[in-house]
Image 1 (cartoon, rainbow, N blue to C red):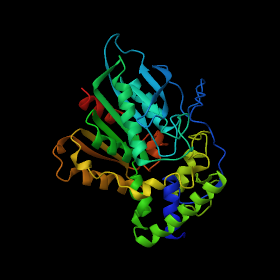
Image 2 (spheres, one colour):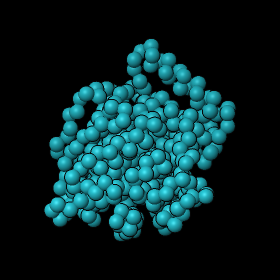
Image 3 (cartoon, rainbow, N blue to C red):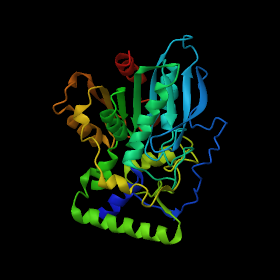
Image 4 (cartoon, rainbow, N blue to C red):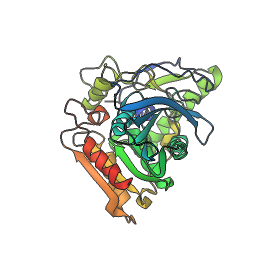
Length: 362
């Protein structure tokens, strides 16, 4: 068993990673270099039912974000479509789960984008593989900005989908932006909670947080002296025999052809050591009970992260002025990663998701 401080640091590094691996980071892409991949390099097959293209837009902090846009080929000419912005999981890229969600929903009549967050994948921002609760929330708001300007989009019918750690970010965005008419938080983490408290709140005490802060301070001092970051938190490989089941589940997705991608932090060496420090000193969901728009929180019955979704839903319902458009959906038999791509049981309830957005993005 690792100490509570180590557990906290692991959570800070990658949202999924209870075992650490530390190497020198080689991801030094300049924020001005937008060498976008032209080939289809997703972990899922391309659909013949949608048009795909790369698009870029700037967030509120001036960082250029790169997204894959999916448009249904059978969309009526001249008709404005409902639209969805998708991101996640935390540390993943648009070529993985978020792209699958976006393409599938485009097959069902929505114009969609799956975007790489700031500092991640093909998007800009330095240092690479870092994160910020403020900037990441703005990434979603800026995706809504972008969608609302498109001729093919009805600006009154925009929703968002956040997967894993981006589920919590999606709820934070929905609380901030009334243009977001419907939100799906799928297999969500509350990254601020796990970063500050550890898994299952096992490190929710001053002593554990102090030890983590000392580790961050050391890493920042070393970076200031050398200019080099170290990475920690990529999904451990090879997989120890005694690894917890949820770590095995992550490995089965990120480290196999099922979900591996060379630009994904979760598939490789994770965040740089203090790249998610800001999350440990912040809290999401404070105003989630003031979200008036529709929300669907979807989690797997067997997911280790299920408590994040259930607690977030309970908090959102406390005194909410519009409780009737809030839904909690627990998928029988599904684990956390099963809702990334459906898993062997095809667990993602696409019809239910289409019904939710079809109802609230009329």
